[in-house]
Length: 426
Image (cartoon, rainbow, N blue to C red; front, side, top):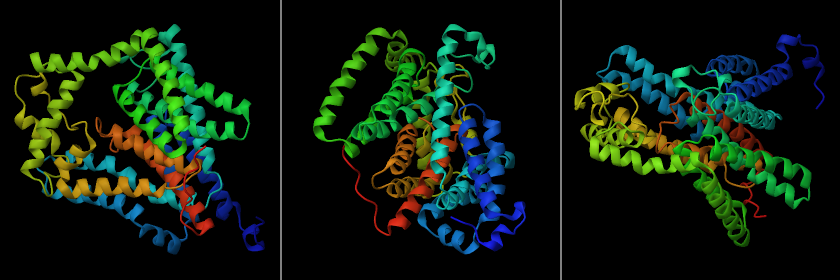
């Protein structure tokens, strides 16, 4: 679209089109850096807000802020801030606990920007490319483990940066998200590109099967596949794919000792916890959840206040530091309980309302709605075992994915002037 003479006469630093392009590029840089660095994401996040600010129409932005998809995440942040008033924790701990909720304030800004931008797909592609490069590095580390950037005492098999939970979240999201474009390409007989994307998706799954995978991913992958099948496939296709997945699962199980060890650790860790009070991964989660339910019962309406969780665990710790019951932590490794302990039923209501509203935002067909829906579904189910809204990496995956896809979905809905179309079943 040609710019008006008034806009063309503006100096470069005041040109809205230049600021919009700059904002798109910075969003792409966030997507590229997210699998690799936390510092860069924080820096680019601030730069993104600065770049978007000159393009904001106050009236339009205010109208967007009054929509429930924006009100609820803002309200969750506000509750965290207000919750510092009735917490018994030190003030430093209270404000430290507010910080993980601050990223939710970026959601309305992303909705606003990508409701107007034409480059939202760039962000999705950038994230896929970055994760593909990380996956290639993970394979390379099998042969050259010394290439890892992690310190020797924290090194993990196939992990170049961060940890296996973060890497599995990224690879799972990319692999399952690719199912939709692959099916669409096959329907349109674009077999070469479909084969390329299939090879990438299979490589992600193979890496998780033969290199390293988190137990959270093992639980969430079948759920994400079920969502895709129910939304986008006919029953005949579902049966054929289930047969294929079952066959591949048998092959992966029989040929991957790493996958078998990960799956078998569920029962082993549980037995060690029950018999010896050992601080295994599963044992600790069960202990955290049991105690957190007790904390919630003590203050069910408004919780114990922001940042109070660690102090509560210190109060009930028994059995010494080398036991599950003696572990002290500020995060119960369950998003609902994390919120419930601090802000009670009010906080849980806001958390669930946010998830539901964002799920409803992505009703309909198309790649954008599929990506947005998948990001929310993954976050909801992985948050059964972690506090992934509040964790830096997974929290930014949610904010970036929902913010970009949500803005594009709002744009498409406004252009159509109707309710979103039903998903196409290829």
